[in-house]
Image (tube, rainbow over all chains, first blue to last red; front, side, top):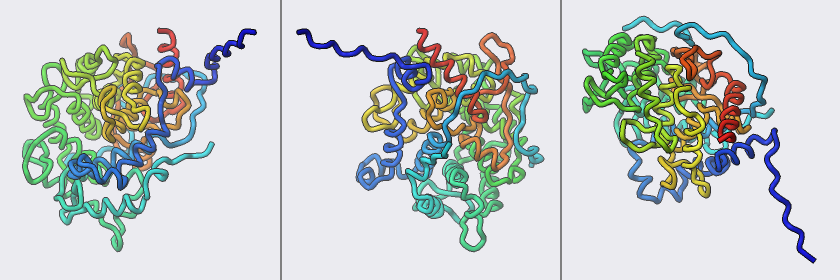
Length: 103
Length: 325
């Protein structure tokens, strides 16, 4: 009796955007691994490496890159909405309070 | 839906603030590490860290704080030269990078009036080349990193309208290589960090439709370390925290992370800070309206960190395009 052939891989469904993106680009986004990597940057193990000490002069910037990277992969999940058309904005859109007078 | 904060997962907030405190100097500036002296680059990084963890006000506490907004602004102002340019520190090197750091740092402490913003913008514009791009000093070679710094300074200074957006948008779009990645100068290899330096400039100019978004998304994804995490400069190199941040920032600006249902805070292309931080602090900036691939004004401002649903929609279209290949 022939062995049952394995079930063919199921194509990602319309709602499975990580699956569809992974299939389309050939690689997914490894969020949890990036978070472990960010955590390891200042770890005791890492502090024994030559690279860690060679980079000490810019440690403040390295801390900023790490904190900003962790912040970017935070927040709430986004539910896609139907495409809304909005009118074009003015030529230059200024945000924030009026600029201070030049010096 | 619950908020998830990976900053709390990765860092102890009190330790972060203590580290920034250890780098504070009497002149109002901050150093790159505790035993060094003040530098403009690290002064900006220090303020950015405090802004992200919402600690600017507590750092200014007269009893227990270590930040004096006026003194920090005075430190920045002391580095401005007669021609409007800025040095990074007492060593005296002039570079448009420092023009950006100066204006961004002054905006973060709410003291843009401490420096001559108009002269600073005039100097930045004097570093523009025939190709529409920018160098470190007048006549300096055009470079993607300088484009971010110069456009960012002009955006904060309210002078983005003085740039030839079509010419510079063309130069930036020419930075996309066959690999899909962006380079910093003609004939150089693509590098993930230009997914920040070049792409943020394209967003400020509203010219992001002039490159292949899905080709760049694929390049950044291929630069991930699938085992240990982190992102490297190009595929199969060693990951580091610099390329990890700028790679994730690129994927966020491209709309890929919201498109695949990942948590993602929008990032400001001007301040390199989460958009909610920029909004909370009311930081000034300008953006040109987006132009589509045919040159028409595109509806709405997408990918600018404000409208996460627009990011999700646009990124999904990108996945659909990649599927169609």
